[in-house]
Each structure stands twice: as structure tokens, then as C-alpha cells.
Length: 256
Ligand code: PGA
Image (cartoon, rainbow, N blue to C red):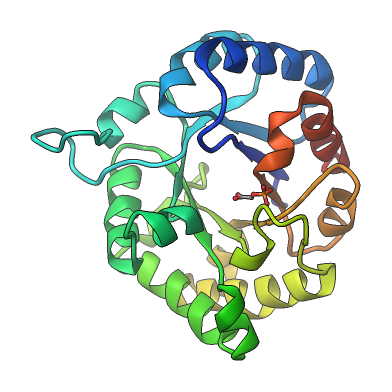
């Protein structure tokens, strides 16, 4: 029912020429794949170059962040209007934004509303830190992040033909560490916390339409185990998305 989605979050990596080359390599590796939604999220400076390179493919473009205002005196920020000229998707509330750039549930919610207003599909990230995990607070933290991030959001975004919401469960301790969550743990949080929170907000039927991804040290070798789980619809990939063959292997693992 839900199409698998694999998104590559390039973070603060790749110059324009490097981004172009990686995209060309990826297109070459991915040319046969249609049953998976593939989204590339390069840094802002490379969006145009990647957009040009993927224009004749079904690969989609995403940004890694937006500001919540449309325009104005906000030095250094990029507005949803600007991003929507190029992108279909935008990552919102990544844990690195929360940890290093002061983002919190409230600003995540503003960004969510602003993205949706401009027809961007937000990939909203949630996940507990190691301390929270060890203190047994995963349920409380993740359900709070889902609930607060989606406050005031119209269920219409998931009731029509186009479903404009993706969630990514990314335990902070698994990001960039090479230590992915176990499939059982990821499935447990996604099924019992993320999906249950979505049901509380949108109801059982509508929430079943939302794609929920796992993120945190996904690679070509472990991706298939996550994708075999019914409630995990794909992955948000950091490090492994910077290598064409590795990323293609992940996408291939999502082909059902
Ligand atoms: P990682 O990053 O795949 O390098 O762990 C995932 C993410 O930050 O989205």
C-alpha cells in the first residue's frame, strides 16, 4: 500500500561539481528502478545542479532544512518559497538541527506548517538521544516529538491522492556511529510509538497511509533487514548516501 522511499541526506558534503558527479553516478546505478521513491537531499548550493542532472529521471529532490518565514530580513536563512521552486521534499527537525542549531518541537512545528503551505513534502525526523534511551524515556520523547511536530496540521495532507507527510525515526545514538538500531528495536519504536502517535492524531485509517522511515547507520548490507519489516517503509540515509554504489544497493534492497 505504501511505496518504499529511500532518501539520501548528504548533510554538509559535496561541492557543486562533486554533487553533479555523484548524481550522474547514481543515475547510472539506479536506471532500472521505478518502484522505489528515491530522494536526494544535497546542500542548498548544489540543489540546482542536482535538479538539472535528475530532470529526466524519476528521482526527486529534497532540501535539508527551511526557515518558516516566506521572505524578509533573516540573514543566512532559506525560505520555503525558494526551496519549493526546486524541491519536492524537505527534511525537517533532523537531530543535528535540534542538537546544534537550537531547533525544538515548536520550531519544527512552524517549519512543518510552512513546508506544507508551499506544497513541500516534509520528512519529519524524530528520535531519542542515548541518555534518553538509557533512561527508558524513548516512548515519552518520541511520542512527544511526533505530537508536537504535528500540532495543528490538517489531516487533509494525508487524505487525498497525494500524501504529503513522511516521518523518519532516527535514534540519535545510531546516526553516523556505524551502530544501527536492531531491526526489532526500530520496528518496536516505529510500530508502537511513531505509528501509535500518528493514529492518535489522524485516526487509524489515515495514519496507515503515512510512510515511516528508519534512519541511523543504514548501509547496503543492513538495509534489507529493515525493509523486510511491514511498518518500515524505507530509510533516511546519511553517510552511505555519499557513495553511489552503496546508496544504489540500499535502494535495490527496497525493491519489493
Ligand atoms: P547516517 O545518518 O546514515 O550517517 O547514520 C542518518 C541521518 O542522519 O539521517
